[in-house]
Figure 1 (cartoon, rainbow, N blue to C red):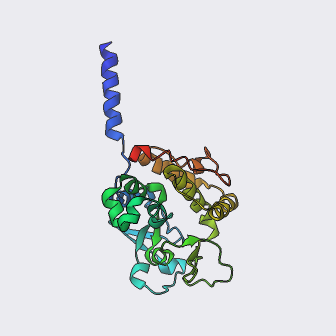
Figure 2 (cartoon, rainbow, N blue to C red):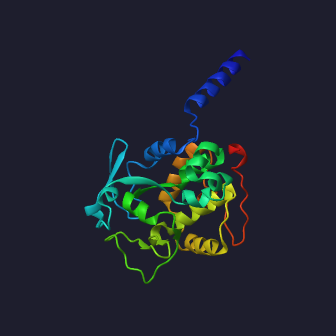
Figure 3 (cartoon, rainbow, N blue to C red):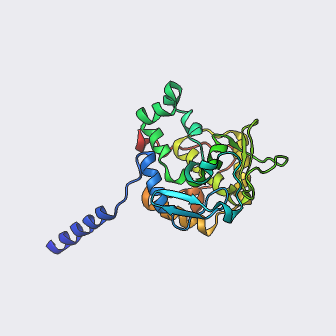
Amino acid sequence: MRLLSLVSCSFLLLCSVFAVAAPTNFDQAKRLAQRIHAPEAKSFYCDCNIRWQGKKGIPDLAGCGYQVRKNGQRANRIEWEHVMPAHHFGHQRQCWQDGGRKNCVKTDSVFRAMEADLYNLVPAIGEVNGDRSNYRFGVLPSTPAKHGACPVKVDFKQQVFEPAPPVRGDIARIYFYMADKYKLNLSRAQQQLFIAWHRQDPVTAQERQLNQRIQQHMGHDNPFVSGKREWNLGDKPTGYGLQANQ
């Protein structure tokens, strides 16, 4: 009996040592995201190799044929982008109506959890992150590319951003996850677009591996990547992640 108690205590101690809590703010999330994605990570939208110097990520622009559109300083650094923009998940909270993002960070624990959710963070070339802004995703067949060989398009007037086909499914599954977990609204048009992208760009082995690495920190997976969930047109988000952060 005593031996069993000692074994149980040792097991619990071991679990406590290796247990990793989910990040509680955006700064923590960025530090963890680098550890999760590096060193094999490439920039999300442009597929450029990344060289890490401490916390600083430097994209190999020449190696991937990227051309600076306007902002050379941001083009030469990696930034952690929210695939579902903070504006999208923030403006649905009362804190945003009362004082914008800064107020949400200060007063709303649910917003802080959404802002720090590792499944929604990807390494992106800073200029592309800036050009994407909080624009909605879409397809721009008549819009020319403006970033060299990087296969993204931006319509600044219509505020639409077109990502490359190889990451469209990833984007869809991130949106499904964020909407479902935090009970966020997706328009019918968004749902139709993302369902199509999910089907056209299925989950890859690399995406599954990333899902597993993030799960070790978040304590749960993205069920739309693991295949436990499937989004259908008209589905209502469950909001299963809200209670834990209220």
